[in-house]
Image (cartoon, helix red, strand yellow):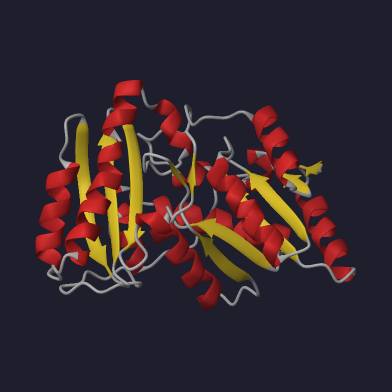
Amino acid sequence: MQEITSLSDMRAWTRGEQARGRRVGFVPTMGFLHEGHLRLVDRAKELAEGVVMSIFVNPLQFGPTEDLARYPRDLARDRSLAAARGVDTLFVPDTSAMYPGEPVARVAPGPVGDVLEGKIRPGHFSGVLTVVAKLFHLVEPDAAVFGRKDFQQATLVRLMVRELDFPIEIDVAPTVRELDGLALSSRNSYLSPDERRSALALSRALRAVEQAWRGGQAEAAALQKKGMETLAAPGVQPEYLALVDEALAPVERVTAKTIVLVAARIGTTRLIDNVVLGEGLAADPAVRA
C-alpha cells in the first residue's frame, strides 16, 4: 500500500491506473477505522481492480458545538488495518491543502438535506457534499462505496452524483453490527460500559418496529409510537424515529421498502441507525465485539 498526501499525485495515480485499463474503487472515510469501513473496502475490491481509501476529518461537516476536536484519530492503526485489508492507496490530504482558505463555493443539499439529520445539524450535509465532491474530483474513481448506516448521507450523495453528472457508480453497502445489534461507529469509542449497554436501545427500537410490522401493523403512526416507546430507555435521549420512503419522505402506510431511521444521544455521544423493514436487521453482517 502506498500513501499519498498530494492532491495532484492522487489524481495522477488514478489516471495511471485507468490508462492501464484498471477500474478504481473509492472508500471515503474520516479514519479511526472499524470493521464496517473494512467491509466497504471488500465491496470496492469487487467493483474495481484498484482501491483508494481516503482519511480526512472534514471540518466543514461539524457544527460549532460538535466534536471535531475530540473526534477519534489513530492514523498509524488506520494504516495497518487498510494495508491488511488490501487497500492499494491511502489518500491522506492535509486540511490546509483541501481548504487553503474559507470555502466560498459549497454544495447545497436541497430540501432532502433539511430534514432529520439536516434539521438537527444545520449545515452538516452541505459540508459532507462539498468534501465528497472535492474528493471525487481529486480521486476520479469509477466507483465509490458508502455505508448504509448513514442512510440520508448516502441518499444525498446519490442525488448529487446524478444531478451534477459525476461519472461514478455509487454503491451502498449494508450496515455492519456487533453481535448484540449495535451498529459499528467510530463514535462508539466514546461510550462508557454503561452507555454502551444503553446504546442498544437504538437497535432494539428498530427491531420492535420491524417485528410489529411483520406482525401485521402497517400504520406508520402506530409503528412510530411503538419504536419511540422502546427507544425511551434509561440513559437515552431520543431525537427522532422516522418511517420514510427511499426519497426520505414520511409515509402513512408501511411497506417492505420503508426505512426506519433513528437518532439518539447516549450521554454526550450522538448515534444514528436505520433498517429497511423488508430486509430487517438480520440482513446486516455481524462481527464479534
